[in-house]
Length: 204
Image 1 (cartoon, helix red, strand yellow):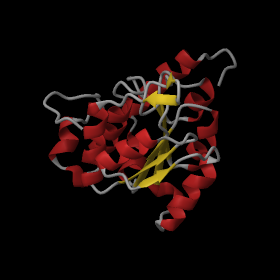
Image 2 (cartoon, one colour):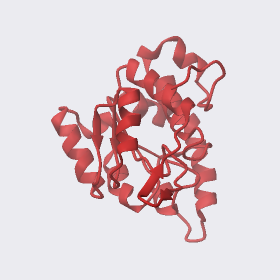
Image 3 (cartoon, rainbow, N blue to C red):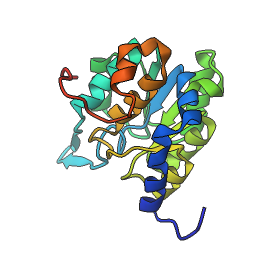
Image 4 (spheres, rainbow, N blue to C red):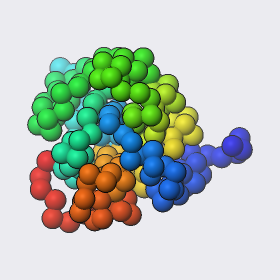
């Protein structure tokens, strides 16, 4: 890749991955999909009050996509460098049981989680937006990043979403994977273009 490529250029090129048959084939084999939080499940902004971080803002479309992906048989996980009761609450609301917080060594964490689930690297996907995510993205068989992410994460990604983190990026990732899964049935057909945020979604 040219050293002249900016993050925006990298993202623009990798949007094309959404229609790539080889990447869809990778998605078809996923059994575990792990996500970073800040910048992926949120827009990356940190809201602080007098006593520390006050709240995080999540996207309901993302939540419904995660529920659909779980129903299709993909195990979901959250791996984040921060510790937050709000992340634990959001994970509980979505039924995500694999929640690893306070770990910057995300590549090691992801490998250990996969091994505990008796999964091989080709069955694992990961979505991240910054340098601590890069080892996990490099190890995973299918790596996603977001247009608001750091260029190092975008460069490592196989696909960069069209939607920013916290604004439908996770839904776009879920829709792309669902579109490749034979077990997803009609859901796969409705999201085959990888478009984030369909109408009529239930709050999540």
